[in-house]
Length: 297
Ligand SMILES: CC/C=C\C/C=C\CCCC/C=C/C(=O)SCCNC(=O)CCNC(=O)[C@H](O)C(C)(C)COP(=O)(O)OP(=O)(O)OC[C@H]1O[C@@H](n2cnc3c(N)ncnc32)[C@H](O)[C@@H]1OP(=O)(O)O
Image (cartoon, rainbow, N blue to C red; front, side, top):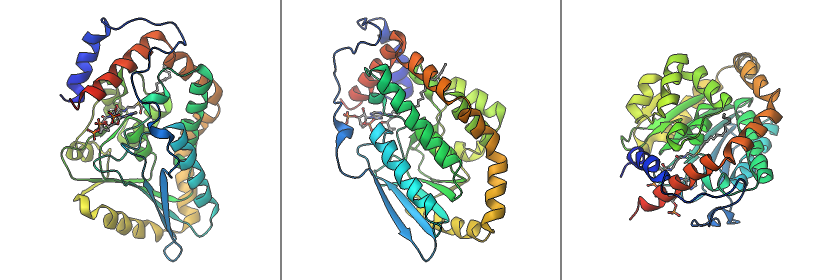
């Protein structure tokens, strides 16, 4: 069953689900341990000669953005940002068929408000660091990239996607019964424009690669086995531009969007915590998780 169809089932299922109290975790049916592995979730290869780093996301099974993942990602990014020799960053996935499945739903389900707040702060941090990066950032999208995965790609300067029709990308939050926050929306609108964003967000549209190219959500499609070479070629073009001029231009374009979150960070965390810990939202997330599990059987 497709996730789109599965989500329709979520709606009809939701009436059958048991109720539980505010902030109280329902019985855990899902493995909450999956992302607690101590193996690195990010592998960085830096080539000092070219000044380009490749960040491979390697958090099985689907590079979901857990608190641990985001923390590691931000530390890696900060190290590269501080290295004056590093001018460009390519982000890609080592997991087959998936760039990133977006925010780890298990971080939003059955967790205390404090933990949810800590998680959301890490999501904000990832976006602020990547959207505001001085480096040239290229997403080499070699798999599906829903919701937070799409945000991560949109936050880069340029997006190359593998031309594989079964991969999808988009901000599909409404399909889960949740709402893309204003800075997700702003990032998408800055890329594809207001009208496309308005429709895509309301309908929770997931685009295949040609559709994504058509609306400008990605900049280029290439066969999957050429994605890193294409990213390197594009990087070479961008590296030819003097850093200071490119960086000031990037900052001029992105600063108003970044400032909007920076000056509302605490309120945004509170909004998230209030929203995600609501009984009705927890119920939707639970049903969605069950559907993801059942997809295999
Ligand atoms: C008023 C408003 C104010 C404030 C706003 C407040 C809150 C809202 C903000 C929330 C913003 C949310 C952003 C998000 O990113 S939510 C996450 C959305 N992600 C998805 O919907 C993706 C779901 N997954 C998939 O579609 C597929 O898994 C995918 C990525 C296409 C890969 O497919 P496939 O290769 O077939 O793999 P499986 O589906 O079999 O999955 C394997 C395994 O991974 C588990 N899993 C998948 N995705 C997630 C995830 N996002 N988080 C946690 N776990 C995930 C899946 O359950 C399987 O687990 P198993 O144990 O069975 O192996």
